[in-house]
Image (cartoon, rainbow, N blue to C red):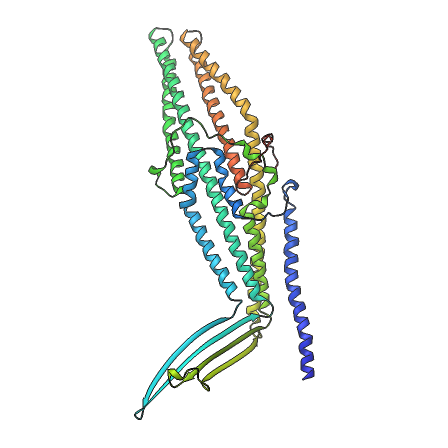
Length: 480
């Protein structure tokens, strides 16, 4: 007996040491790997991952209110309620939360209650039997596999929550982008109509000059060609308008004919105050980055769960009840029944299956790490691109506005000279083309600036609140 006790006392510390080594090796491996990955992030973006709260998420979604645009706000509200991608992500979160609850419940004993009665007749003798009992069962991995499974399920549920938030942000960005594109299409249509009107005026003058013998038919034919070319461009713009409206209808879960977006002559103004606090944000604010890190933690625990199957599992089952010939006698002295069984089990001849299960989880870990790296690189790319777009659009604004003023003046002067017979039609044509291009470039740049802020909203994890200091001036550059 003493020898047996000595052997057990030697096994226990060894088992604890092995289990501890497994846990620590997994944690250390992930910690070092994540640290190496985060070295790719610019120093000014680095910080610890802030705690996520309901207030933070609500502030992110209210970021769009700074645009002061009722149409856009109504579209976003509708999208949050009816977008199919958001509804699917919400259902996935509900399923993941249920699995997490199930994994937690598996850590505790299960208790069942049962009752039964039976009767038989043999040789004119009736026999009855009644029984009531409770059954208790509990199984736990001595290496902590159940705990690792429960922890992994919680990480997976948290990752689903982040995926839902990332879906909301992505949908909001797509809605805003299509809204800006739709408004730009309306503006382009108005510019095309103004260009058509200018070409029609020039055509009337060319026709009058020809009839008066002041020019040949070449100018008239050229003017007709320009009028019809300008007229043919409008249906293509109408097509883009329909496509953007259909996209908004899909994103907001409604029919295109019920979409409430009025025709306009301006592109939505980008609220540059939103960019004030950009340097304070980090890439790890992005829900997809959070989800990738949580998924990595979950897979790490799944690896540990698979490895724990090599160690014994303790199972305890028991029942306690009463059995008697009549219902009234249940619970009386001498009618009690009880049983308690404890067992240790561990694999011996299914090592191949255990190795395969572990290898599968290790492969999943490699994939989770690759997904994390891909998400980080995508975040870096999107942030740099959006900041660069904002910076470039700001630098182009003044030059494009000056070009538009000059083009309007040149086009008006050329038309006056053409009416007076002081210049030819080619000069009018060139100035009108320049005016058309200047108008479209100026409006497109305004749309690019709005698009840059929309992309930055997505790149940095879904919105941020500007500081209350009114003296703080927005500063946008190529870096956060």
